[in-house]
Length: 630
Image 1 (cartoon, helix red, strand yellow):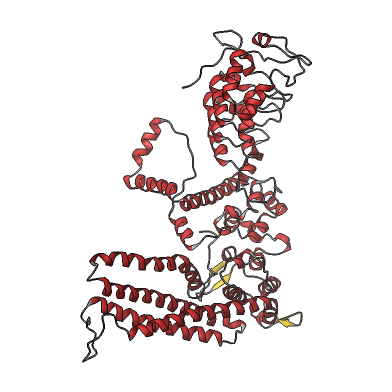
Image 2: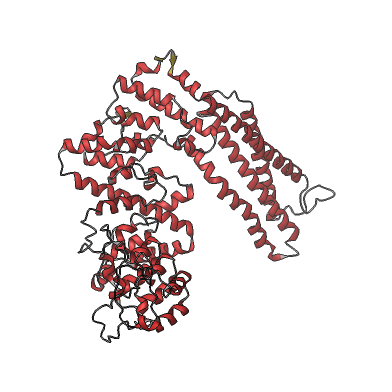
């Protein structure tokens, strides 16, 4: 039940907000004095009279505060601290939600506009503390609170994008309930650009602010784009399927009805299912938020490019050059930002950040999607760089391809040291095929580029060798155990044999047929895995072996190992069915379910890794034309 506002000055109409009750310095007003309208003093302190009320506001003791207000109605809006704060300000700062809600219901909407010494209302404090319930309660009671600026000229929305930017729900709510009106004018005041930059930083895990421009912030925040986000196989599948809509337009009831009439039944059903899935499955909600951030960042880049497109070409080029926007984006691997910038301003393709080219930065930091913006399919159906690098640029690219940066995020995204070495070899071979032919045999500092590559990757090669040997040892042990079990099972057929002929008694049963086939296939698969892992252990471990030979053997060995494990479980299930079928006819279903659990666990834990290995070795090249103008 909503509480009725209290009367402070005995005026039943409440046309005007009540006068503040202030405590003269050095005096302690009695309850009878505070019930009237004492003389207002410029010096305000938290005297003894209001100290219990202040303590109640800190502790959220509403019953005491309520009785205090009944004795002294003026205390509900009185200044009770040296910072000119009221009970409502204190409750907001101390996150006393229920106490605060009761106070909002107690006061008239004009009384909610009281400010402290910094010019901040209770809404400012609620935003700073990240209390969305408080914010909604205040705005619902008095929508004008969103327009009141503090002494620095910042309305609550401006604060929500800066000091309280981690509370994105509050920023989103205030953005929908704030207008560009006086006195705050949040969208046209000098604080507007700060708000937009603050919202751009709302990934909550980026660096400290070093650039006051939107593109400058985005160029350093790779997590705001798909190219800078690492997703697992399952996450990538969800990311691709989940729908995202970033445009928000407030609509009245009539427009909502028209909008609903335009949706098909299937679209409404799909949207409802995804919304329900976000509630039930946390990972779907998280991926939806990630994709929303990515789509919004791309839309923001487009809007910024449109806004500056009216400037002269020299001004635009200087703007990008002074802030090293494309250079930062190329280093971070934000191909979307590089692509959109070149699409809007084609002259930027010739820009040289850090006295080098975008192609060299992409090679040095191993960002294939950024490099793909400059790749085209030639008439011979091979990839080539466009614009073609000159001899100096080719030399820089070969030097970058031969070097190894162990701290590169792209390298660590690959599973296993062997496949990291494979990725490095793929980069070197690709760059070698794109540069001028004479550089392939040229020498740099007395060494060929291949020799430089081997020397730079000596530690990675050692780590890759140890990783392969350890993996092959472990997998070979498991394969040997499985082969031993399945070999022994082949001579102990369940159901026993005919004593005269040696033929199994259950030869005509389907369960025995399943057992025989799965046992044979499992034994064959485990033996193949043993042979492949043995070949790996006896390999020379030359650098070139990590490009194709060793990765293919590892993939085939793991595949046969997984198959042998699956066939062994099928044979085990078939044996149990043969033994228990006549006694427990319902046993088929639970045995099938129990046997499926290890297989499902194997798929969830190891299939993504195997998929990445297969994609890296047998799939299409990691280098492909992204198409700047697509």
